[in-house]
Length: 184
Picture 1: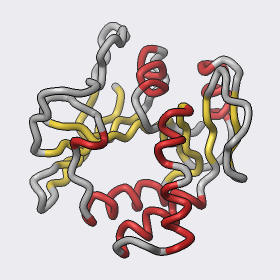
Picture 2 (picture 1 turned 45 degrees about the vertical axis):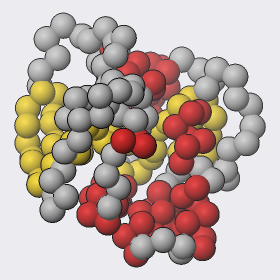
Picture 3 (picture 1 turned 90 degrees about the vertical axis):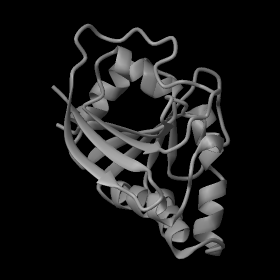
Picture 4 (picture 1 turned 90 degrees about the horizontal axis):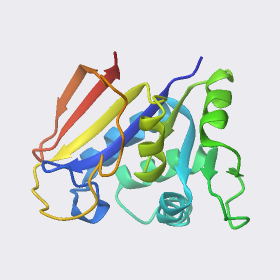
């Protein structure tokens, strides 16, 4: 059975707005390694449109730093599932748009053979956390207090007793730290 990994950049005060983060080569190298370990990306439409076409264009043109280019190549190569109630078209070739029930589809995908799945963004992961379907959490905490912006668990009804076990902590030169937790 495949696990569902939720990965996100976050500030010290819980803000997960991508414009408030540090995005350096070390961060891109970390996420490239994570992408190489998974077999499927899961997004909502808004996060997907934030990532595509930007990263596929970087992969094609190799227009950024080597670390960013490597991230773009790893991102572009992975199949993607996008959950949307209304979006009908506009997805790239290796992307499937899903209109069915989030819970049922994720449970079905978990049963398929292959590498683990990675979910990003805020809305879809929040729903998956509420449903108790996230197996692993990876947070890169930036040494920033944003003071504003979308919060990770804002409006989320957490399952009773959601306990996580820290299994890895990796400090970055920037002062950020990558934290890896497993659901207990």
